[in-house]
Structures are given as structure tokens and as C-alpha cells.
Length: 206
Ligand SMILES: Cc1cc2nc3c(=O)[nH]c(=O)nc-3n(C[C@H](O)[C@H](O)[C@H](O)COP(=O)(O)O)c2cc1C
Image 1 (cartoon, rainbow, N blue to C red):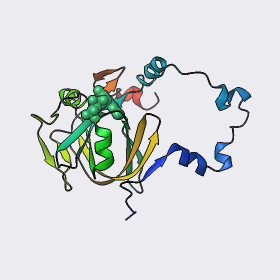
Image 2: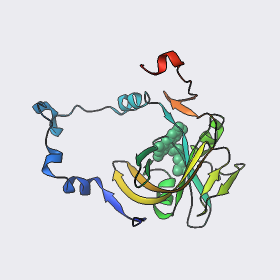
Image 3: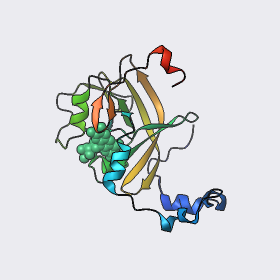
């Protein structure tokens, strides 16, 4: 069992200071214009539009706050990180209410939403005072909410937290999980959708 670093925070600066010279070297043949000082300014709208072209699933990240009340927010920045140990990550804005909650709470659950759970996603993306009103859930072994009907859930123990610009990357070690058959809720182009599999003829080579 690896040590748990519930309060361990690493900044990007720590990472950069740790990096070996080789890690920082410019790639072969990269032009001088690729130097950091010469980078084009990325407009926020342009950045958001490009990122919106990346299709994702939708999750609701839940935990218990210091008072033992259930808390949660919608996140599509979820991804798997490592198989051994089993690690996942989610990026949380440092401006949302969930950020201080997640930095102080213990374990959290990533609930992967099913196709029919768009309303749940909208509820947890809101600023409602009680986002759990009318929501059916059961506590995980450590008490964090597992939402009824979720396609899968992963109970995570905080492993590392990396401050990255206006967000923090929360890396969690998966300590328990479950999954159910069903179809996922998808998010693409700033809109909810569903996934349609390609037909057999096209799926292998496309
Ligand atoms: C589909 C979708 C995905 C989202 N993904 C994220 C995310 O990955 N990280 C994040 O910080 N906010 C994300 N948000 C926004 C938060 O859910 C939203 O700011 C929410 O109000 C935060 O709630 P809180 O202030 O109670 O924490 C997402 C919203 C939607 C609709």
C-alpha cells in the first residue's frame, strides 16, 4: 500500500525545479520561435472553442465536507492516469465552492453519468444551495455519495494535488469501484449528447 498524501500539494514550480535538464530541452529541430518567450497569445475564446471539440463523458465528483454534509460538482476533466497503482485525475477550478471542500475532505467518489442523467449533471453544475435535494444516493465505505443510476463509480483516496494555473489537478488512488450496464452521457461542443457506435464495417480501420 502506497503512502497517502491527503494534504500533499505540489506546485507546477516544484515540478519544473525537479525536472532534469533533458526534460526541459527543446525538441530536435524545433525553431527558435518555439521558445517560451516567443509563444503566440492564446485567446480564451479560441482556447475554449478548440477544447469543446474534444468529446468526453460527464462525471459528478462527490465527497463529504467537514460537517459530514454531501457535496458535489459536475466535471468532465476526468481521466485515468495509471494502472499500477490505480490512479485517476480530475481538474477542479480553484474558483468553485468545491475546491476548498475537496482540499479539506477525505475520500471522494467520481460518478460516471449514464445517458439519462443530464438533469443530474445540470444540477451539480449549478450553484444550488442543496444540490443533493431529490437526489438518490448511497454512501461509499468511507461515506462519500455514490449516485443511484451512475454508469460507474470510483472511490478515490487523495494521492496528490497539483496547482496548475486557475485549476488544481486532483489525483486520486482508486480504493473501490463499481459499474453497471448502460449508455454514457456525452459532452461535445458545449452540449450534451449520446455516443453512437460505428457500424462493424467501419470501426476497425477508421
Ligand atoms: C459538462 C460540464 C463539465 C464541467 N467540468 C468541470 C471540470 O472538469 N472542472 C471544474 O472545475 N468545473 C467543471 N464544470 C463546472 C462546474 O460544475 C460548476 O462551476 C459548478 O457550479 C461548480 O460547483 P461548486 O461551486 O458548488 O463547486 C463543468 C460543468 C459542466 C456543465
